Image 1: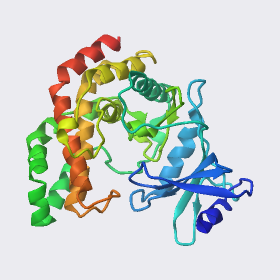
Image 2: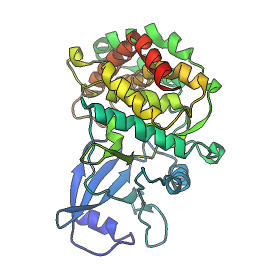
Image 3: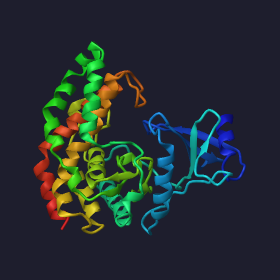
Image 4: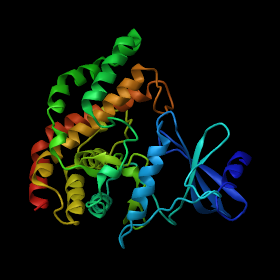
Length: 348
């Protein structure tokens, strides 16, 4: 771990005997828990510059938004400054590293069956948006071009399909068919009609920190902060909160849409007051189809391209992810009436 200790020496922190533990929740960045005498103190991350190619824009957005996320019910995360006063360092081999404060006694959940966790997830996502409601989004830069644009993702998928190995195409046939059966419906969602907001853009459940009593504290993994619509953050959250199975669950019979968890999430969102437009409320339930579909088509595309983007533990993990995500997307289609009723009753 001498390499990691050398990285830490670039930041304005005390010199101490630091210990490091790999955190493997994320699929993109390399993340380490930094402790002193077994006490967690910082989170150290190497940003994946193959994914985040525009580091300057990423830093720009974080430097603008992080200082605004201050509220009595929202825990602030601070980036440690480097010895030169910057928020990030670049090493000799062009790796980009950052160091942020660790929130003591915080926990994360990949999935949940707990109604309070679902409620608190809705509350903190709603609070994030409420805090940033009046921010001038024109100040933000696009760090990941067309990140949640379904037309763009579909074109990437078609290009990958043309070049894919025949065996990969055969293995993915059911997923490919699902894309073709549903793409026209999803292309019909006109997100350009919706208010432009500061969006986290990756609000899966394990990007929310909780206290040990299951009170939500804040959102983490903020690299994807950009302009967007509420559909993105709403749909991304619901896909990991209303479903109690893992994202790459291989037994599709275990994928579920739990109405009680969805309703609790809605109660939490509504606790922030009615800050959404009527058009946003009308389209929220379709966001719950859009986001797992988008993640599914990205995982499918990556599988067809031999796993260039996401980290995988085994060769077909991206394929498992896409089957799981498409199964949830289908369940979200099946549950449109329940979601619309719940949204109309709670967001008044």
